[in-house]
Amino acid sequence: MADIAPDLKTPSDLPRNDTRSVADALNSSLADCYALYLKTKNFHWHVSGPHFRDYHLMLDEQAAQILGVTDAIAERVRKTGNVTLRSIGDISRRQTIVDNDRDFVSAEEMLAELRDDNLKLVESFRAVKEAAEDAKDNATSGVVDEWTDQAEERAWFLFEASRRA
Image (tube, rainbow, N blue to C red; front, top):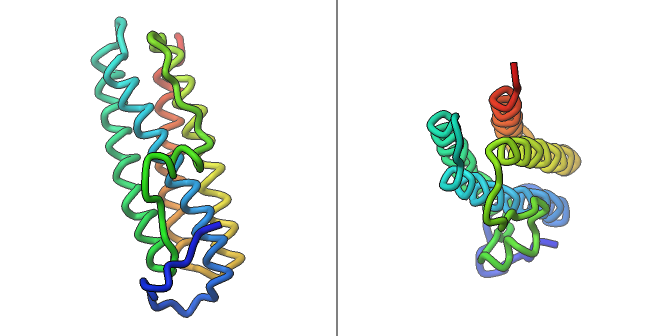
């Protein structure tokens, strides 16, 4: 459960108990974004094979997009008067996307794993949407739609890039 920092006293007309559930969902998504960002960069750095350039560039673009969402998620948590992630340890306790520390991952495995992870992130964003709507937090409910669309697009690109003729 998200902690409330009394010294922060962020003004909000939303009930604190309702925003805690939204903050929990947002912080879980944020942790998954960081895990997915790092995995995507890892695969960007280590991709090899005949489609190296295409995959290398696509993964770099996707990593930048994922990282770009993190600040918006954290700021949404703060706008509702809650606190967000504080450390790598906090991320590791909350993330549901599994790290990949293998020495070698084929390009095909990378694309499939990232596709599945982006779809898992879509599920996480849908949980945020549900919590936000239950809390009548229309701002979070609205902004999470864009994040969901971006994750779905990344999954689609990864799927299409991995198709064989």
